[in-house]
Image (cartoon, rainbow, N blue to C red):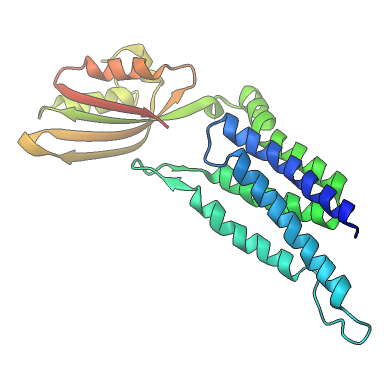
Length: 235
């Protein structure tokens, strides 16, 4: 392998890593362009070193060397970086899984370029971008309505009264005491606890249509009698 070919491989790995990082950075995700490019180039470099070491030091009498030994360690080593971008928020929502998968994928691109599989690496990048951006959008548009829902976390602080049961029934669609937009919400998780002064805190995770504006849900809860405080977050 000549120096020119080695440099070309490193630059090509940087270019492919750039596209992965650009997609994440445009969406303000933890994985950015710098991280993705470094992972891809480093993986490519380690793969080249592993192959060249075999070609340089193996002899007809001593060939008990694995040219992919260093490359195999990339897969497990990059897993630690992927774990670093997976976050668990206070509302028990897990985020960062796609970024973690793309970190692992960036290392795979570097390995593919290091071996010399240029066309396969380009096709892989195209498939990655389609998997993250295009295919989910098409499935959402053509699939069942449940795919076009999003989740909302709501915390409600209420004065002690019997209206809490009516509130929960209205959300679950068992009564129509509240306005019609409330009927479009579905309860996914619910937790009720007593707090100071005998008040109750209700924590809900609701499914709502993507067209439902978060502020509308906030005001639906805010105008209910005996509701002291409302906190709402789009997940």
